[in-house]
Image (cartoon, rainbow, N blue to C red):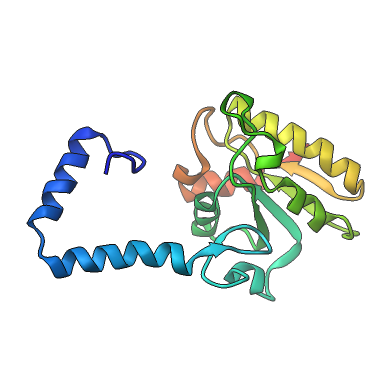
Length: 187
């Protein structure tokens, strides 16, 4: 249990004892639900968001602006933006950020897939929405450079820093995200 994010030793003990008190049927339901995650969920082939089909509902939607791509670190960031109801473009989930100390380079992220999406676009805006950290800023700088090499017609913007340094997009309230999107600037 302590391998779960945000679960410390005390909480892990509580969860383990809770499960021990539950009946076999309850445990089987929980186990089945966890197994279902790995069997039925995958990455959307378009944007990398967690989905239960080849394409996620956002990539399937005809009402979304396909010439606007918001690049985020994780699927949780997409959930945060969608909760704000202020963005009607598409997304691209990188699956992390550059972190040489942790052994995460461009090869470990979905950067090639992003660049492939941009090669034939004549008009597009890429909104970089990395978390405001040193690694997030380094990732944004790297992406801007790579995007310009692939397609100079693409406008690269970055969300405004309505988010405090060191915070995460997934925990931001909708108003902060709306201001961050409205205040974005060319990068």
